Amino acid sequence: LMNMVAFIVILLVSRATASHDLEDWHGLARRSPMLWLAMTVALLSLAGVPPFMGFFGKFMLVGSAFGKPELVWLGIIGLVNVVIALYFYLGVVKRIYVFEPRVPTAIAVPPRLRYALMVAIVLLIAGGVAPQRLERGTTEAVAALGFPSRP
Image 1 (cartoon, rainbow, N blue to C red):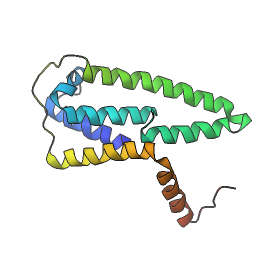
Image 2: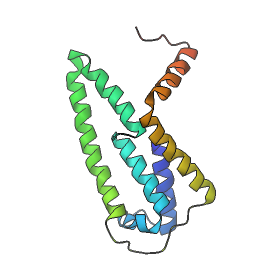
Image 3: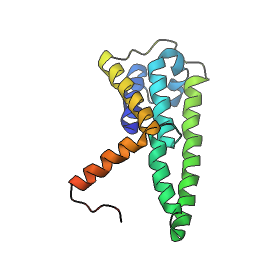
Image 4: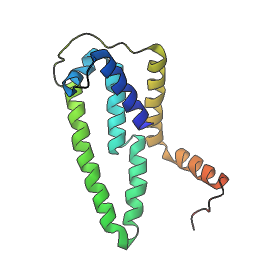
């Protein structure tokens, strides 16, 4: 879901600007608040920042590595990767929000995509705020596929 939101925003911006240049993202918050919000939520979720859904996944993964003494090194590498990713993602968010746009024209978001992005934003936040629902559903799906449960 996080990647889908990010790629939808990337496609909309690249189509509107006819470019893949990172400078075309400058001032996106003023040009299209919907795209700014969607991209910011997607990037923060990908980085594993609470209260977004990505935090739950990273917490479970890194937490399980720290739960076994022989895998502590893997947990440390995971945490370092989270910090590195956050640095780069916040650099994009800074470009979107702080810098002045090269072209001040608004970027139109088709109504269906606007609705889909709003639903995805809510799901990314809800998945981080109430991860037990996500975990329960995932556990039931895995059990239905015939995989053994945790010991």
